Length: 56
Length: 239
Image 1 (cartoon, each protein chain N blue to C red):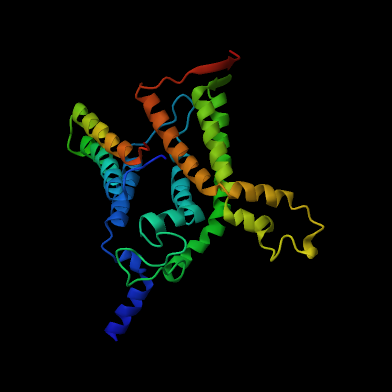
Image 2 (image 1 turned 120 degrees about the vertical axis):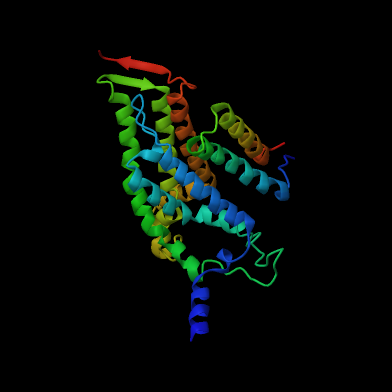
C-alpha cells in the first residue's frame, strides 16, 4: 500500500517549502541576494515541498 | 449597544477565520506572497507563447481565483485540510476542538454559492486560452507548431474540461429537475447530462490536474525565457 507522510510532518514541510521558494524571489528582488544564494533557497524549498507530497 | 454591535460583527466573521489555525494562516501568507511575486515577476509574451497567468492579467486572476475558491471540489479540500473541519463526511466534530461543530456552508460561507455566477465568467475566459494557442501558431507570420503550443493546448483543454465538469454546469443542463429518471422525464435521453455526470464524478481530480497544469505552463515559459528549457520546433510551414 502506498504511503504519504503523516499530516504532522506533511503540512509544515509543504508550507515551509513553498515559503522558502517565495522568500528566495523576494530576497533576490529586494535585498540583492546573490544568484547562487537565491538558487540554493529555491532548491532547499523545492526539496522540502517535494518531500511533503512524496508517495512511497 | 457596543457589545451587541461587536457580537453581530463577530457573527458575520466565521469562526474558521478567528481560530489560531496555523494551516489556514500559512496558506493565507503564501497566497499573498505568491500573488505579489506573480505581479512582481511578470512574464512577457515569448516565442509567441503567452503565460496563462498573464492572459488579460487584470481580468483573469480575480475571476479564476474566485471561480476556484468557490468550486465544490476545492471547498471540500480547504474545509477539510485548512480548517480541519469536517475531518471526514460522517463527522461534524473536530479532533482538536470539540466545542465547535461543523457549520457547513451557512453564515459567511453562503457566499460560496456565487460559484454558479463565476461559472459564466469562467466560460468568458476560455476563449482567451484558445486565442493564445492561435497566437503561438501564427506569431511568426507563418504556421509554427512547437512544444510550447502543445503544452498551451493541453492546458486549454484541461481548463475547459474543468470548467464544464463543474457541479453548476450539471445543475444547469439537467440537475435542476427534481427527478431525472421519473416517468415525467422518460421521453428525455439526458445523454448530455449523463456524459457530464461522468465527468463531474472526477471533478476534483480534474480541478487539481488543471491547476497543476496551469503552474507547469507558467514554469515552462519562465524556464524557456531563462534559457533552461528549449522550445522544440515541431512544424514550420511557410516562409
